[in-house]
Length: 65
Image (cartoon, rainbow, N blue to C red; front, side):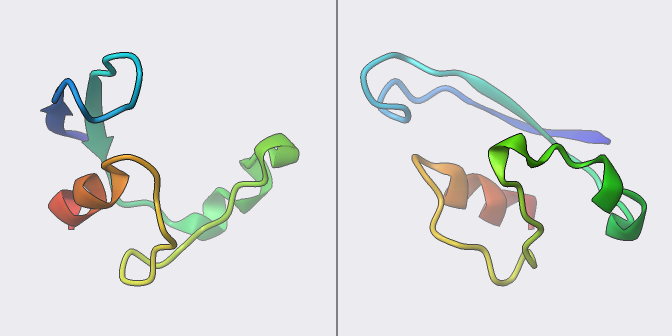
């Protein structure tokens, strides 16, 4: 796992200021499918076919690519 960047623009999260320190890693998703908690309806997506993301998360994903 490596640190990607810190995102701290005062306008990035709406009403309150939100600061995020992001990390990325490469994993074998076959080893993690059973460990996903279904309470929040998670799903895997191809990095090249991401759905619409909230706030500045699309820019974060692009930077990670």
